[in-house]
Image (cartoon, rainbow over all chains, first blue to last red; front, side, top):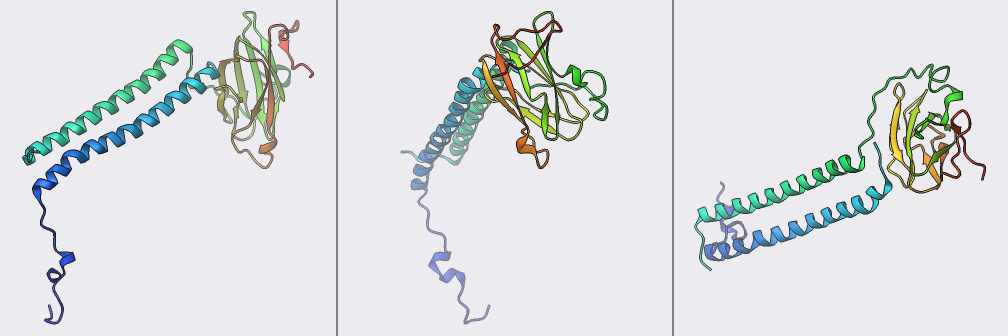
Length: 65
Length: 185
């Protein structure tokens, strides 16, 4: 490297922050629960929609085969 | 809050993933169960029929000759409807069917792929050249229903539709030959 070119290590944005492991553990304790609640509610909405269409529209339309 | 050992983290994540997989398994079993139960108890199945017919000669003789088209009623009261789907009309254009009794729709085409559905019912099938499409159903409400072609079949596709006249027992009176035509309304 030429001497007048700065190293990336000189730029604070390019250097990893010091991670507080305790703080990370605290965050990681609650994040999966939130993700599970969010994904679970969205899946529940889709399933409820499917059941409503199946029971209120498809079944009353009669037999088929 | 205590700091978790990395191995505990792994176990917790694995536990979450296994719980989620179990939930997904329950949902799949539930939806398959609904399909199987309705198929066994209510007779709701995807129409399935593999029966060959020569599209070049189907209108000349046999089941789909002109005199056999339309609705005929068997001795057991079961109605069978034979329809030709052709560019760009159904023959016949009006179909009489009974309410609350078993009906079998049989369709064939001499030209290209068509498709039918009957509004407000679960009747929905493709009509493929070389095969007889067959659907068993029962109509629960009387009145006129629309039966359009739902597979693009050419420039006149949008004009290709028929009427299904669902009749009560008082109106649905087969003639001596067991055939029924639409009532003039």
